[in-house]
Image (cartoon, rainbow, N blue to C red; front, side, top):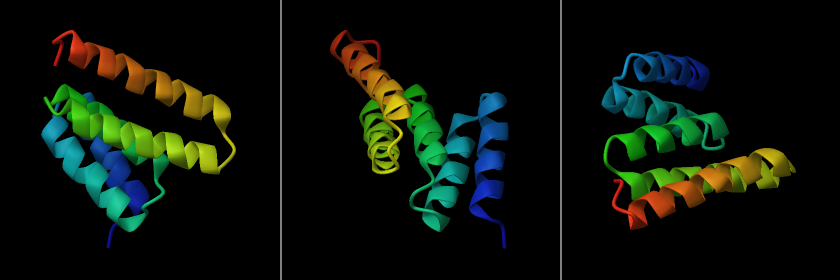
Length: 96
């Protein structure tokens, strides 16, 4: 059986090749195995937004913010929160 890290790495490989839908599946598998896999939430959120599901992408990014905050990593939490705000602004302006 593959580990969460292996699924995540497969997701990254698909992402780099521009295969967002496949990447989302792999990130989801990583999250199913490790519900606190913050990087998987972050990258799945990006992929979802790029695949035309920005609200779901925001939800994943907000989950990443919450995990970073729970770990006391306010710098990363702030950076991801900024991404959330940019995505929300893009949605308001019709970019998605």
